[in-house]
Image 1 (cartoon, protein in one colour):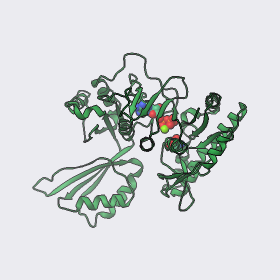
Image 2: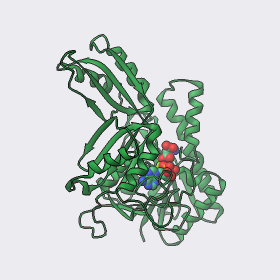
Image 3: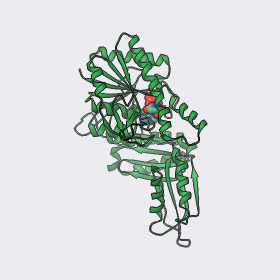
Image 4: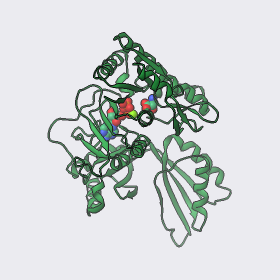
Length: 422
Ligand code: ADP
Ligand code: ASP
Ligand code: MG
């Protein structure tokens, strides 16, 4: 039997009991004859608590120190997990991201993995140990500083290690039974998806389904690593994420699911002169501040004024940086004002089947209209439609769309075993 990588999220190791429960599960895999490499997240909401703490001592903490702070969360859980496994009579060793050979660029808070050299992990498992690796962290190639991969980054650590170690499978253990047709915290009648292709999973992830991180799915697709998303609290089969081509089990669904995201804000640049170069200057300034944007909307100007409004969405966490960058631009681009709105939500419908199916957009908008939800922005890709609405409307909108596309299950309610949803 080959090597498996198992990743346990924060909700699975929220307290001492959780750590002991997970330790038993890991030992089971080892007893079944696998070589086992475990990636672990910080306990419960530790990362959020550390961020709150940092903000209390500094409004804009330096990225390098922030990464030093946050990586401590995963060091706590990895050591405790190794102790719990040893207590069950099995050999385990914990490793930081740096010790595990996770090499990244120098972009603190959102570092990209550029190489994985897991020599120490390979040696540890070859000697019969269970290797426990701290998720979400690495070391920068250039400066040798400790970096983090961005929120939820342990998923990426797990897939990257699975690829580098040529693992049979990467198992992502979490607090729900797999990937559902909508967030089970919002839609009780959400259905578990047995198989989903990388493409649909990528769209769901980038649209806010945080059960898997976008970058981790991208990585898995590139190296063709099958991912099994499942609960650490139940013994049920979860969701298999993999290739659709040549996979009989994976018939392309018309609609895979509904995702929502409340982590974004909207900036509107009001009264931009409608002439070539203005949008370019605005987005160059945003790029210069290293802010990633999502949706962009601009209308043709009212002929009488020659002015237009440009709106775009971005992570709330980058709002201040973006507004500062635009304020500085005011001298060169003569726009009238800036509006910042963080009370928005994005709702997305995802499905490879929608490419060839007319009427999906109409059904989507009709469902929102029946739920009395106003649409502020719209964007589409081949296999996704997204809208921006008021944040207060998000739950109702997701449920309405889920029902309208016949996704509601008529059997068991989706179970959420743990976590605070934070
Ligand atoms: P972990 O701590 O294990 O990393 P996360 O909180 O990052 O867990 O991800 C699991 C959560 O993702 C679930 O508790 C659920 O609320 C949320 N979620 C959002 N969309 C989906 C979806 N489509 N299917 C399953 N879970 C989803
Ligand atoms: N602990 C980190 C976070 O909360 C990384 C992870 O859990 O994947 O974002
Ligand atoms: Mg996660």
